[in-house]
Image (cartoon, rainbow, N blue to C red; front, side, top):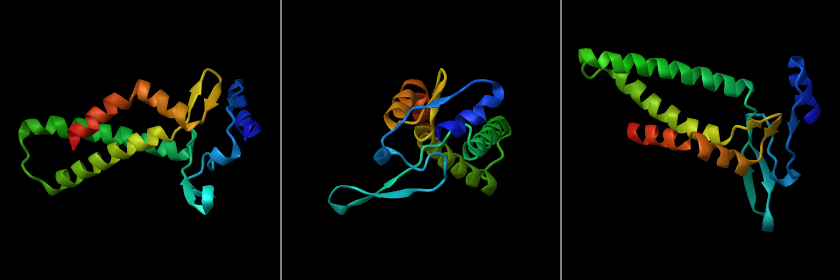
Length: 145
């Protein structure tokens, strides 16, 4: 995994190292699937993947989020004219609520860069997100519901 990410990032001349995890705590890094792993006493549990911040899935999500911000700007400015109760607006309000709620989960499952290394440990990702954007995201999402 490390050599693949270094090869990708050597295009710009910077090398990147991936912080290693034990095999039991690693998911299928960068994929959109879920692996099943057997735990203690034969209990099977799902291990969710950690997305690379530059993956295609994360890029798609970021483009969708930016589009939704554009819709929010349009919708807020349209409230001046009082368009009334329109089905399209009601549907988009629900889409907006669901997308921003899912964004919190995706932010908790997306790795991040620290100087020159890619952090993919779940606790470190959660701590970083809690220290940066978790409070504003929660406030905006809870106010929307």
